[in-house]
Image (cartoon, rainbow, N blue to C red; front, side, top):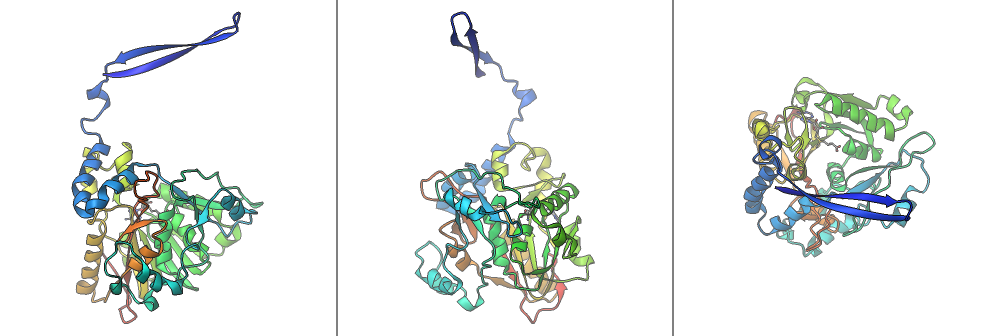
Length: 402
Ligand SMILES: C[S@@+](CC[C@H](N)C(=O)[O-])C[C@H]1O[C@@H](n2cnc3c(N)ncnc32)[C@H](O)[C@@H]1O
């Protein structure tokens, strides 16, 4: 039984008074007809409680709270826009670029050794020489911890190019980890709606970018994003190639190979090619992959990918899920397939230094990025888990089916 309160506003013009009349109604909820017995969000949370409490232990309660809180965005600065004073205006509102405020590359190793965060023994960390540089050209501004102010819509410049793109700030981390260098060719395998694609282009180092997405409608969205953020001349230069095809096939069918491959894989994909994050599954009933009718889709979610990576190249695999099945297991499968079936040597890069570097903004557990500011219920979340598969220079030039 649900109770509804109905408020009626009565305006008495002759007396010049306003009265509110409140009535309570009890309405019998039509459970059978309107609500599934087990809402998908409840199933998702139950599933997460069972698996993540084992996986994340003490961290799970606060991660759970973070997941159920409002999502917090970052503003990715668009250097292709000439809209004036964008940074100044954002900074005046209290935002800061979370990338540049952290220590410089040379300080990173020192930072990681000094750090008192809960990571494993810091002596295990990669030597500084092996750590990729962090592109100084990517800028993403966020409100401070505990501040849930919303960004105003971005303003266009005189050519209509928007000054910033709102995205989960954690989405920028895989792009930074990809370590794009001048002249690189880059494949963005699951690119729509285009946040990472746009961040990749902010480096101004990409010589050629192939942006692909399985879904036709989402590929249209990707096109619209690029049209709103890049000058027409830049799009006409044939530097960007957009396709809508199954990324698992792309590496197999194309001869082309790339210096850098970004696989921002959907955590789960249902039959409508709709992809969701853990947060979506826990919060939103619509298009929820935990719906009973979609169980099969969840189980057959794309654990496989192909990536055409040049020898010595990097693949960054990122997800929006905490699931080990979606993360560690996929990477392990990729490595054994590459090594055993293709004879390719694959090296997994240790990204703990990277997690530490951004730990002021994102509380990290291994490579998972969360803001769990202890006890503070306002969090910057959506897990974004990175694994870098690096092909050492002696590896064959071959595709990597996962
Ligand atoms: C998490 S979203 C990617 C977000 C994007 N990288 C960004 O930063 O804006 C995942 C995307 O993967 C696409 N996708 C799902 N399966 C795919 C496949 N097999 N090949 C290519 N794209 C796929 C979905 O259509 C969806 O747009």
